[in-house]
Length: 629
Ligand code: FAD
Image 1 (cartoon, rainbow, N blue to C red):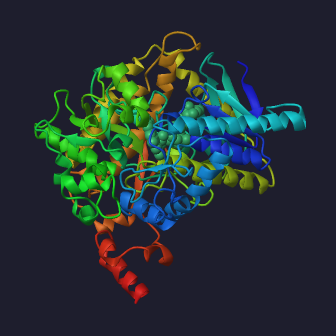
Image 2 (image 1 turned 45 degrees about the vertical axis):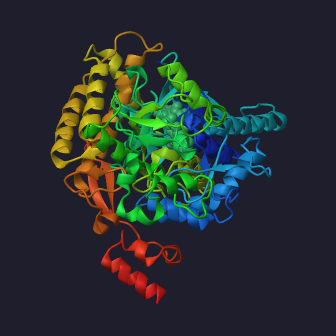
Image 3 (image 1 turned 180 degrees about the horizontal axis):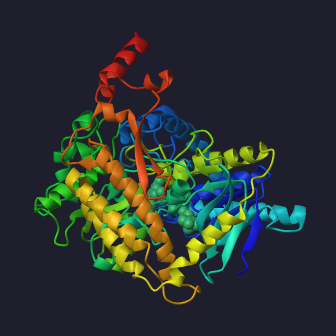
């Protein structure tokens, strides 16, 4: 069987914001670059992002700057973040947004013509640059337009628009190929006809997004099966923070066919409130001690904040997502939920109908079309949905390099930036900042190579045999295994966890892994989703094992990891990362603890002692005292 073969300097896997920004950078630095994506070009999660991109431009409140953004990001992540990434992100996000504007993005404006910025959970000032509630669409449109502009330039210069940057859409990568320790290529198949393809390349940038399809209730779409996480693990890279999963507080709960679909946080940022079945704004009962001085304690103060932010504290509906998701979970469990098992999110009694339609056009349309609910006239019913993974490939903050030579990662597939919990809006800016850095990192790596690594024929044959195996057996139906995995993860490693349930989940995942060895797909290689799922299952099982193993080891509750048998945050655990690696014999995943490097002096002194005390150990506090003396 012929295998199609291509040679590139840099291959970017994923065409969301991170992948496109990385590819643009690599091409701008003169590298022949391929963009490979599993779905149609333009259909990535980035397109679905509604709220906006967080960047401390200070357009709406001039008190905002990178230091305030850095502090908010570290607080949101409960101080577990890779502080260097949080620093780079806060400093560079405004430039990346302005760059998008220069490339043609049309953001909403303030009255005086600047890029408008909206409020979002956990951000002290209005900070999200946005285009209504369709920001991700504009971001992708602009980046794609930039790719086309570069292709037009290549046509002029080289007579071939695809000479330096080419898109391979509906093409799924199933293995990274190596030469000794170093990356030498990537192996995959075309979804349409099942033909096989090899990219020979010394540098791969992973930008494959999230893992949500390991859970039943999720905002993620079909392609988010943790492929990049698994490809990295299998190539010898490490994953960190895998126990931290963000359950977005507001997914649709009804009708069942659309359960999990996201209801943007902008609904709350623009004035929407959460109520239980008794009509109570319950979030006032759930303000944790670490945030007590930053949030309003009465409805009157919370409401005043929307028009006078200088003299009032923000309403608790805008607490970080992990806090709101847990609060909704508790209300539903206490029997105060809505008829369909969520709570009420009401914007209809808070804003005029015309204003709702202007500010939240997609939400208005989504509820009307999918649930026959008019959000200008009645409340929505919402509940938590698996949305985002904070964990991912451990990378160097400045270059996006993983610890396998030639492997880079950016965006949701990378770990560290968001610590234990991501603030809304910090993903779109993360993609731009670290996409650019990973593209530059890959280009610099290629420049420094004395010789190009070559994938061995054995590696290609092994990848081919693995890819075709499910077609060669009439084994168990992969959908059955997938459904059981989703249920296991949702029920036993969901928002609230404990040792007994996570242990049960690990046993179940182990058994499912054995069953997955035998799944098979009837039919040919032409557009065969059963076959594709057989291949995706390997990735979802590996990722689920990482999540469950790390969740069992971390005996504390922090951000997107809540253990009801260890309800408090532990300063000792804050210093530690859990690092997942594939076991050398390929039998599964091993997890080790690693101590994080202490925060740089000029960054830690941006915080008050009183705040740090809530998070760091006595020993670290003594170092801080010595520093500021
Ligand atoms: P994605 O945009 O997820 O792209 C991943 C790409 O990888 C896709 O092209 C996919 O086809 C490809 N891929 C995956 N596996 C393979 C493979 N094996 N082979 C080849 N290609 C592969 N964040 C914000 O900051 N603000 C928001 O307002 C916001 N709203 C959101 C709303 C929704 C509904 C969702 C789901 C997420 C939202 N987020 C938001 C989060 C944010 O959109 C994502 O975290 C972010 O877009 C991820 O971008 P990415 O570039 O890392 O990957």
